[in-house]
Length: 193
Image (cartoon, rainbow, N blue to C red):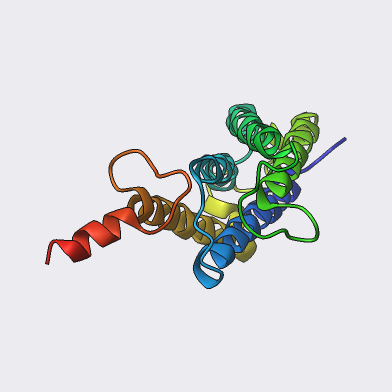
């Protein structure tokens, strides 16, 4: 498989947008349906943000095997947490977290997404031509001059910061409640008035 640096950046930007869609869907359930994420759900979000970090490095500095390596580590972490949660809820009568989406729960979809990230990242690693400098391409240009890459990067940056902020509001500086019932830190701030 042969990819140019520009094609690689476009694929990385599309991958980052896909990760953003997953995080936005999680926020939809959190804020509009008031389904607070459990501690394992929060760890899965960390995995998605970390995958986004690797994609962001590819968009900022050009594709590098070590950036893909970070993505693989993050996706393996995320799929491990997803599988742990699936196994906790696979036995009938053990309950579940959240509403199903197209018949499966968010943590099951997260596991599928992490698996696809692992496969996609492995396929991207197969193309060594994306790492080779090309005189026709300006390697020093951030985002390769692509508006798609810039938009995806800044949306991911916003979602990463939002994830940290909403997790702090839900859990405070300590251990998160399982199951989460409210925004513990926010309630504590309101109660101190």
